[in-house]
Every structure is written in structure tokens, then in C-alpha cells.
Length: 120
Image (cartoon, rainbow, N blue to C red):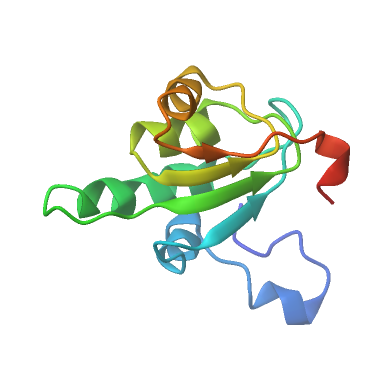
């Protein structure tokens, strides 16, 4: 499907882009908010695309990490991919990914526990 093909508002069509182009706009230290609610409600392509530049920054000693807010539970294409890339510095309100959970438990990722209804 072409980007913007299902967007009815002409003004919004120009803002539609590929996951790679969207990921390129995100800088280290950014806060990214993504939808979430089980496997059907969270983005898959954009977090996977974001993991690539994060991983590319590490060999030279650079740190590229983001703060992630999501509406509820997500899955391996979001929390898993970003955690595997060592790209999360802060996460709220909920996490169910085993890689991210290990990083949180070791104190490598800040985590704020709150009920998902408190994140609008």
C-alpha cells in the first residue's frame, strides 16, 4: 500500500512517510510515544526501523537511546527490538518483553510503574 493511500485529509497525506524515514527523524534522547494494546495495537515497522540507527551508533562508542511511552502492552517488534539494540533509557507504563525486563531489573533502563489508564 502506498504511503498516505488511506488518509482522507489532504493536509495529512504529505506527512505520511516510510518507517525508515520516520525513524530518521528521531534523535537520541527523544521521547517517543507509541500506541499499544496487545499484538494488534502497537507499531511494528517504525520501532524495527529505529533499532537500525541505534545499533549502528554503538560500535563507535556512541549511545543512542530513547524514552518510550506506550498506551499498554506491546511486543517484540517494539520493546524487544529496541531493548535488543540497547536503545531504551526510560520506559513507561507497562512492559512485558523479557529482554527489556532484564534490563529494567539490572537498572540499565529506568522504568516508571503506573496503571495504563493514567497514560493518555
